[in-house]
Image (tube, rainbow, N blue to C red; front, side, top):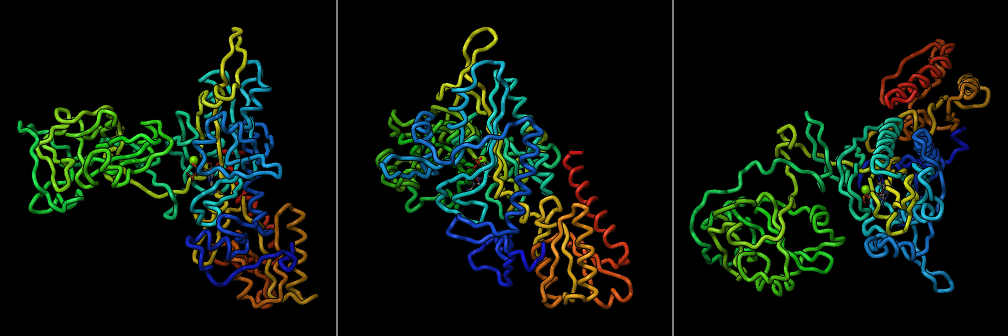
Length: 584
Ligand code: ATP
Ligand code: MG
């Protein structure tokens, strides 16, 4: 490809509405352009990268034995109603009407469609296991599309769905996908780590997310450096707070005391009250799928809403408004408690950290008053104990006791063991060997292909631009003759090296633009081709050219060796990446 023929609209300025570096570089390198919030056009170089990532995903899915299919993005709402997700996924579901007034939905994922296929086509245990995948466009009505391709309204996803006869079979299918994901991200040239994950609205009971560490990520990952534990903070557990919960028996009955104007945990820690946060009970009123509930946490803990949803089975949870608190408990937020006046209809959940807590202080359900000497198990009706708190850095890992760390990361893939949730609802059953009918045991496996493209940039760049891993670069090599005039020695040589490299299967772009060297160098660094060859008249007179691996120093090499050196370099890079992925 000649640069003059390839549409590469690079930008000098950082686009004003791009907040994170990978989004800025996508735009600046001329890979994509924004149509509207969360909607992007891929330009020629962007498409080349996208297709390469897609090809890696496809190869590894095929290697793992999955079968490629292609499902419609436009889907009838009935199958969504049958699975129950017409309601539970309504926040992300795009709906539209055709000219006859009939409603359709745009696929945010495709469990419903593939399970419909399974229901109709899979009948015998002899047809199992089977794993179907597709690579295609998904739509999600994200409230806040942002960070370019990271959170878009329309994006590319690889989604796979496995059907097994048994639970052990489903575990084996899961493992195959898990291993394939490790290979895929390694072959894309990035580090992505599997972490234990919450299952959210998809449901199921076992799940890992693949995370690319990045300060701009939207997830917090809790991990133990020595023990290998890693989990999304939505799911992570620890041995508990580093400050022990007060447990010494005071023997005293709860006693109300005036706390005028005190409506926060923090205010009660200050003089004249001086009640440390860990000696307070925080009472939260929540609405979980339209039911009012109470959640009790230690004062220094934060509620983890993903855990709340997982423990209560609710698909939507929100904090109650001040008026709803008043109606439920007769007081405003800041004075709420669970010792008195809790109607029997309101279920009370308490965090495990509070078990056995004594000598605690909590709201009195009377504005301007708190209660002290509270013993939770004596004074409060707790209906269910569970882990509701968010782990904090420094707490001890359950397995090793080592302090846990927390870092930000980008979720690029997600594997779920679904069990029979969808197969039961959509009637995907098979005849087992013993003649009995059973629902298929399912798994589902997603990779955000477009998000992965941007995650690669987020992990592989420097101040000058992108540093593409060779496996996903739009071109592997950029030839840069400084004088491009027809017949100029640098141009003639560049053309002959171009022909040799292309014949050797190397992907080359020849920068034939009549631009100043500085402009050409800057552009090629910005776009991030892994290797550049500079052909200048002065060095050529000495029989030399400049080899410049992206992000490394220039090496002078003899002209006669140029093609062979480039071919060897590219082949070594390709092999290194494949080896790191464990692929021959
Ligand atoms: P998130 O928590 O980031 O909203 P999710 O957990 O809802 O994602 P999944 O349903 O697990 O996403 O989808 C599989 C993959 O699709 C994700 O791992 C992610 O890489 C990608 N993905 C999900 N939503 C988007 C989006 N709005 N834009 C781009 N990629 C997305
Ligand atoms: Mg996910």
